[in-house]
Amino acid sequence: MPLLLFRLRPPGRGPARVARGLVTAAVALAMAVAPASAEDMALSPDLQVPLILKLLTYDRHLESRAGEELMIGILYPPTDPDAVKAANAVSDTLFRFTGKTVKRLPIRYMLVEYTTPESLERSVTARGIDILYVTPGNTKNLQGITKVSQARGITTTTGVPEYVRGGVCVALLVSQSRAQPIINQSSCRDEGVEFDASLIRISTLVK
View (cartoon, helix red, strand yellow):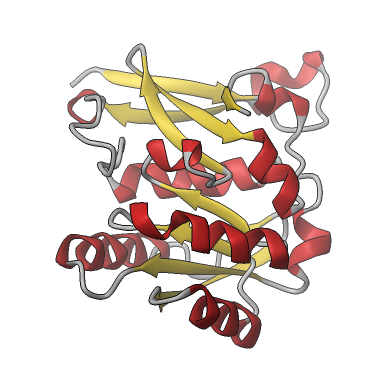
């Protein structure tokens, strides 16, 4: 089966090291189909999660904001069966990264139910969440989610590209048969995220 690639140069490395340092993300052709609706994920969790973790390494402030570990909250509305299914799939994928790190930060994760902005703020504060992965089914919740993420300096990411236009910081889309980052520059800035210029250059930008 043909493979689709996007490549990132590790931040801070010069041109002489590009050949060795390129990170290649292979995406099966069957997954590179444009989303059927605004709530569809562009890539399956097993393909998108490793790429999202790689994108996070391009945040210049990740280590200073995260502390001793990187806690990822998988945020889903519990009344939506499709959202629950997606949350479980993302959880299963993150389980494979047990013992791995992002910028020397051990990866931890947990499922977080979204009901209200107030309950979300209590959860992220009590659990020390650094990253919120927003599942499908959260279209009506984006304003409340990003209000909390921006107030608390929490990076938002998702498998739904359209959510970036609704205020989520970063995601992946499929463009011209390639997986490509999509970044909401305003939202990222408000969350305290500063991506390296090498990532910005290859991304679709939303202002």
